[in-house]
Image 1: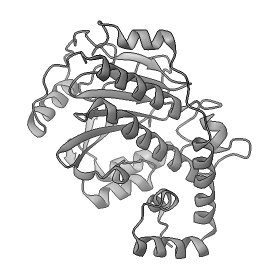
Image 2: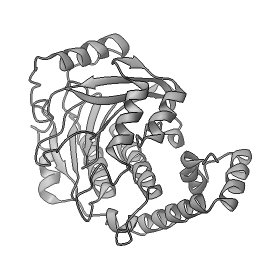
Image 3: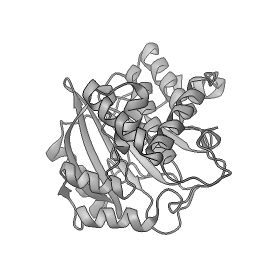
Length: 308
């Protein structure tokens, strides 16, 4: 039996067409696992909607609004992975100018609100997550090797479904009106990386997904910026924090945000206005949590406990 896993969140959010909704509801009515998944998603959504918005941390707000925020220069790093990623973006995307500081107070305030909202939604995990708990290293590796044994390689929708079946998320942000323009498997500093370019009425969001599929990971080490292959501190990112998971930002046009957790790192790049950051990042994080909610959980670890 095929399970409409990717439609369950849209069913809960009321985002399905009538025809699709009827089909999914019919499946859920006779599938115990999907019915349980829908129930978990509804409990999760109810809990998140009931949470109070956090008050901005005064020190963090002063740092983000300070004239020097985001103005650090980018240090180039040599190496085949970094060189390929830079060449790749010159070849496939619009010319990206050197990041500039968001000069207006209104723009900076929007960035602050976005980062605080995103860091809050991401939340913390009650214990360190392992790749095995999120679906298994073997499945993640097998999914990647099945579609991208050599990189770079362009991927079609069937190959994305293969990745999803192995534990990759492959976010397309459909509920925000985005369409998939291209999908590509690349390697950044030896790390398998999925690049998705999404479009909506001329606006572009590029999402890089890097699952932590190998060996021990140093939790204290800053994550990679998938755009350049450098660690985020080399590229001038500001560490915003997050309750147990990391959020890093490089403001400018386009803005960049790196969301780092024990099991996955997302790099998000967009020319959308800074005010659009909260919705974009929150959708990404909510969908990631929804995917984890559908995975088998231990008896002592509810999804709400993982977020809180």
